[in-house]
Length: 225
Image 1 (tube, rainbow, N blue to C red):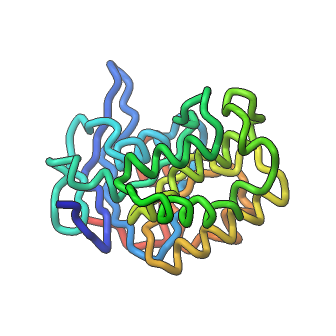
Image 2 (image 1 turned 180 degrees about the horizontal axis):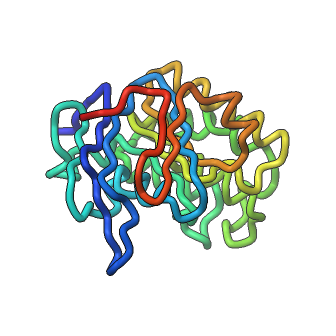
């Protein structure tokens, strides 16, 4: 059975790759209805933290909690997570519409009308255009970014993790993304955002955390244990 939760916490999270320590004991709690901006230079550990919270890897040590439950059974929580990273994670020979319809099936939406409703909801983000019917391998960086975001948002996840979602987006795309994030926050999603677009982050985020060399340097939200 899928779990529900109002908070996600990381506790003393450590991640090493060989001799490199990407995370060095990170602890923090992220709450429903808030957008948190993860700041830091390249290589500071931001993307590693998001991937671990997306359950795409295991920490070297430390724990991740969804509500009061540890992520020891990842399958219980994956259906509640939306993740958009540096790679679009879509099928290149399928169009945007075909990709999203397929992912909707993966998430258990068997009813065609329900899938169509969910795809229509994402049109504000994807934008109208002939590209929606072309293979994804023909897309520009911005079009791929929109499709990746659509995939992450498709199933109304409880936890939404976005790594550089503003890359490749024009001004109109940024405005659309801002509206979508406002809607996701209003429905109670827990949202973590990594972006180098400080203006966008300042406009949409409620909290900020600065990570430096794998540690939290400062934050304007109460850290977890």
